[in-house]
Length: 202
Image (cartoon, rainbow, N blue to C red):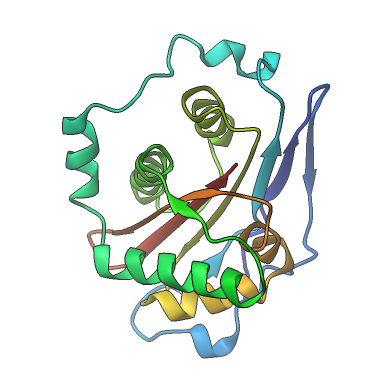
């Protein structure tokens, strides 16, 4: 069975390092395979870190703005709320049980996660395309200093995708990371396949 290997990007104050790794082998436990849909997949996680005013975000200055209530509500209507809420609960239960601070739900991160799901569905592929724009938006609108992102598709419920993420070292690093806020989006494509994006920041 072939699984996607995606790049891990690190955003520093000096350089944008891009490296590809298969340390997770991007493998999915066979128990997570479901009949009649494409095989569930998880991608290698992405994390950016920076400091305010980093020049890597300057090229996006004219494109970054808060979502209007109409824009947010239009995309949020596509969210499979029961599953995204369950993921949020599982994420905070996991962190609390390990002595980590719980994350607050954030509308900016939620909107960007919903946007990314729409994009992934449009090209029928999980990826971290345009991650720099999402993270720079969070840096600018939320005064963030660190961000992370996990994506997945093909899982049918919160438990299975969360279990896949926590058995993958890269995804687990974000789940247990030094973050304060999160946005989770779950969106169904026209064939009923679910796409997941979980953005973290502090």
